[in-house]
Length: 170
Image (tube, rainbow, N blue to C red):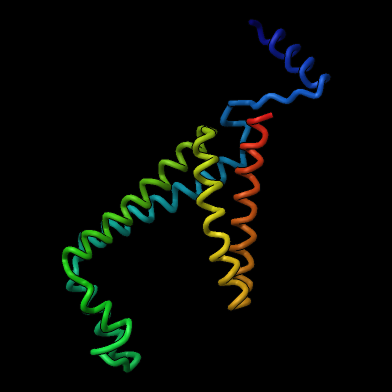
């Protein structure tokens, strides 16, 4: 089929109120912007996971000791005491694994969004929507402009991805 026939078919579909999803990833700049953010989040998570593995538990325990001393906390009770005792090689490896998986998921989502894949829009829409109640609660309890920005950005992300999914279904 020639380009002229394709264009005529698209023109005829537009006249009859039909809209077809354009699978060209370059036609979806909103998805590309979200993909870049997801790729950066994924890369930062991979760096954090690597950092946890490289530094190990001893420096983490030292930093918790410093926080306890700095804020004059009870080293035998409370959240910081629990954290101090929870930091061990197994816990650090587990935390690094969780952060690694989190990072890989965001990189996979970013790649899928960059390529305008429907599964990536579903994944991004669901995960962003899951964050919204927490973001709204944080903003409602602390009323800071940064909280409002986070809520607004997540609402925009959910809207862009939901719109992408809606247009695909038409």
